[in-house]
Each structure stands twice: as structure tokens, then as C-alpha cells.
Image (spheres, rainbow, N blue to C red):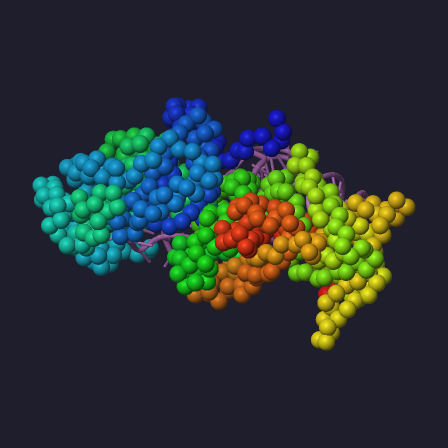
Length: 562
RNA sequence: AGGGGCGUGGUGCAAGGGCAGCACACCAGCCUUUGGAGCUGUGGAUCUUGGUUCGAAUCCAGGCGCCCCUGCCA
């Protein structure tokens, strides 16, 4: 119906449609192959969404298959975490499988290859294997064990499997072409020996484990995956991906690659994220500054915003950096604002309080002002906000001597306190250090609610909180984690590029309707930004995370003036 | 250097022989009880050289540039 509903199209969807049309496949099945060794981050979402959507749009199904082929790296805890994050995004799958489910069958297929003379056991040391692989410009050398008899290969492979040989002593290799210009085709390793630790699912049953190229493609085939979507760096593996099922005479899925998603001002590599956590630069994997889904969720990014962002980004085969593309975080932030603007309840909260005394307001009077909960959503209704003689306003909303184009409060100027009254500044009170501690104003009683009966206008409306009704809260203001657009460059460079001000903790005041907020709930603090209630909240002390600020036109003007 | 991939405003994507368009960013204005939201408008791009063609971002050739590949990681 609306233009938003027009189906996005791209070369991947086109390829799938074509395969269906010309009969290469008569159904669609995709797979999500995360390795359970880390938490999901925004970069993963791109792959998750295309796999999910391609299946969904074609009435097909998605299989979530954990790629657990290396017991030295994988942990069960990540299996649950990955599923939880994927569900949060709204991804649905037909079933969950594990590469390890297919270890037996895969082993049979390997023996078949040995029988065909297409695979052999190599006794070279890892160093020899590496040295004999050749270089980009020189061909590799055949292993001296390359032409063993089928019987010997079968026997050795069986004994490898049974744990008769130590780690690293032998591997099973595909027999392809040691002179192939594509290094992946130079007799790639299929199985290596790993005794410890036990596998998280198969325990100590296996002493050999399949390599990615051997396991992944064959698992795709076994599961009847039609479209195996992966990132650009696997382009070079495609000949091998196709070679195995070709030899075996089994079902051949189609692999299609796309550019990975990176964001500027952040790092995405597992290793670097881990360092941030382990060395305490952030509070954990769910630190609101992390590009992990857990971090973004805690920060208050709606799943929909992340999904929208990735959809807006599109798919391509452009490789700007690290097999992918570097998106501008402002696009993500705009998606977040887009969603939150429509859904968030408005509240008033003061981040950096400045005391304002309304000299002509009765000392003990308290009035209840009507405030709109969400101008974007009439159904959200209104609420009462208490008003009294002393209020807090934002320090930024007052200047003793206003710069050009400053419309807010300054001596002699009249502004509106949102939903309350017009006030006019008369004078300020300073402490010994010369800092302004109180601003004195008078109010116009006829402007209750915020409109002047005489029709006069004010150029500015500012937010406020009644001092005696205010609830003190902790406010965590976030900024980008890194000061450099590309902190990835260099090994240690990213630590040096950390933004020292990525977290600032403030003590602010919020209106009483927020005195015991529910963890996870989201609000817009008017004129400031979107905030969500952090799990660190206690009944005594609510903690708010700034999800994203509102666009700040004044800040822009001011910056330009300097 | 060998193989593979890719070059469209600042960023991310469209257009696939026929007026280079969208989103974000940027700039100007309108509107406003959020300097928010919304609305209107401006500026800015086809890596380069040559070829094919009435016509090229698109097809061809050369050049240049960027990304990936020499794990018993995925």
C-alpha cells in the first residue's frame, strides 16, 4: 500500500527469483551459520536479515545451524545468547541444527572421497604443509604422501578418527591441484586432529574435526539449502564449495556473496570487542556503547530501528574495507529516532539543573499542568505535571549574556515554560566564585498553560521540573566509543582512539511521573533526547541511558558561530 | 607479484544502451507550546583514457585505485 511496502530488490533477490523461474530450484531454504563463539553485533544483522527475508519472501524456510566444528573455540553459552538476540530482532527459523549433527554422515562422505582417490592423509607437519602450499605467485609442491593407496588412506583416516595420532601429526586433504592459482584449491585440509577439549555436544567421541570448507558446504547440501548467502571474503572459496558436491554427486546449493557491514566510529572484530570487555574499557558485552545487539538493546535501540537501518543500507558487492562497506552511524541513529519519535512517551527531565525562582508566584501554591504524552500519537493522552515556585531548568537554557540567535532565557527575555507559564528573567544570584546559582524571574499568571491572551509570542519554549516534586536520577550520557572514524586501522590503534568522554554520568531531575520507572521502558525527555531505564535502576535511584539525542539545531548554530 | 572482487555526491544504495535518482549527512527557508517532528527548496557524483553507438554510469580494451586470499580459524 504505502511506498514503504514496495518490495526492496537487489541482486540477491533477483538471483533467487531467477533460480525459481528457470527451475534450478523449486523451493527456497536458507541457513544462518553462526559460530557459537561470541555475541552478535550489528554487522551480523545484515546476514541474518537477508537469510531470514529471502526465505520468508519466497515461502521457504530458514535453518539456524550452529557451526560448531572447532571445540577449541566454541562455547555453549553463546548458543543461547545468539538465539536470544536473533529472536529479539524478530527472526524466525524452521529448526535449529548443528554442524556436529552431521559429523557421522560427513565422515562417510569423506571416506567416499578417499575411495574415489580424491582425498588423502598427509603426514607433513603443519609447517611443511604451509611451506609447500606455495605463494601467491609460485605454485605449491605436492605432498610426498599425496599418492598413498586408497587402503592406506582409509586405514590412516580411521585411526586418526580413533585418536591414535597426536594433534597436528596428520590431516585429511582433498586432492585437487597444488598449482591452482586459487590457493583454496591447493589440496585444502578437510580434517584435523583435535583431542582436547571435548566438544560441547559430541563430547569425546571425535578426535578429528572438519574444517569450515569441508563441513559448511556439505552441511548445506545435506540440509537441502538452496541459497547459501555469505560475505565477500568467501568468494574465493566458491570453487571449492562447488567442487565437493560435484565430486560427491550430491545436491548443489548456490552460494551468493555480499559486502559485510561495518560502522564508522566503532570496531567490529570479535578480538577487538573482546579486548574492550576484558581490559575494562567498557562494562561488558552489553555496555550501551558496544555495537553488540546486547549493547544496543540496553542502550534502548529498538530492534525495528536496527532492522530498518540494515534494510535501508541494502546489499551490494562493494568492498571498501575489510570485505565490506562502512556505514555512517548517523544513518543508524536516524533510524532509531524515526522509531522512537512515533512510540516514545514525552516527559520532562533536566540533565544539568539550574535553579529558577519565580518571585511573584505564591510560596505554597502547587498547580497541576496538563501535558501531552506524545504529540505523534493522540491516543497516548495527557498527564498532570506539578508546578511550583521553584523549578529547575537546563543550564544550557540560560545565558547571562546571550550569543547571537540565542532565544532562550536571559536577563530581560521572556520564554515559555512548557505547558506552564511565560516567565521573564529579572536578575541572577551568584556565589562567591561568581557562578550563577539562582535565576530570578517573574511569571505572567494570565499565560497559564502556555498561551498569552493578548496574543504575544515568545521565541522559545523550555522544559522544567518543579524542584519540590522532582525525582533525582542518574543519567548516563553516551557518545561514540571512538574519536576516529576508522579505529580499526593499526593493531593497537583502536585503544588509543578511544573517546575518553564516551560515558558521562550526570545527576538530573525528572518529573514525578518517572519516580519509579520500569526497567527497559523508553521516554523522550523533551528537547533532549530518547532515554531508557537501565537495569542498574534501584527503587531509590532510577538510572536512565541516553539512547540517542534529539537533533540539536541550536548546538549547530552555536558551533558554527565559533 | 598470482588469483578473486569492486570503483556513481561526504556515506550507503538506485538507474543496466535513452532526462543520473533515493536515504542519511550538509545548506537555506516555512511551520512549531520540543531550536524535536513535519514541509519546501539549494548545492554537490558516474576513477581515468580510448573504442563501439545517433546516444554509454551501463557494452569493449588499456590504465589507475581500493578490498579479500599464502590457518591444521570461520
